[in-house]
Length: 138
Image (cartoon, helix red, strand yellow):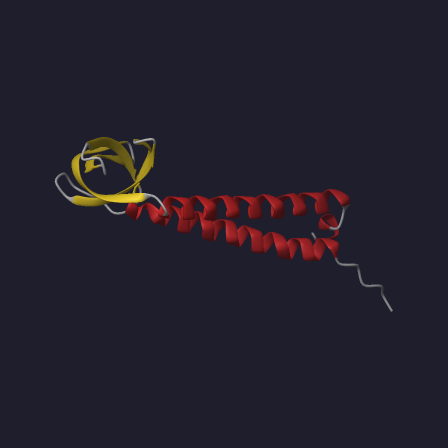
C-alpha cells in the first residue's frame, strides 16, 4: 500500500483529499460561527411535521419590529412536541428573515466538524507517508 501511495497518482490523491478536508472544515466552522452571530428569539412549536425519518417544526416567533414570523424549520436535535418553547436563531436583513434555524441544531456542526477533522488528520498522515523519502537499504 505504501508503494502505491508514493506514486505520483497516490501523492496527488492524498494531497487532494487533504485540501478537500481542510476546505470543508473551514466552511463548517465559518457557518457555525456565522449562525451563532444571528439574533435569537423564543418560539412556540405550532406543529410537528414527520416525513419519513426526518421531522420539521412549524414555529412562530416574534421579530424585533413587533411582528410575528411563522416558519418551518428542520429538527436535527432533540424531539420537540406541539406547544413547547424552543429558541430560534434567525438572520435579519432589511427587516426580513432570510434564514433561520433551531438553536439546538448545533449538533450538526459538531458531527461534521469531527468527521472532517478525522479525515484531515488521516489525510495528513497519508501525505507524510506519501512524501517521505524511501529508506535505502544499507
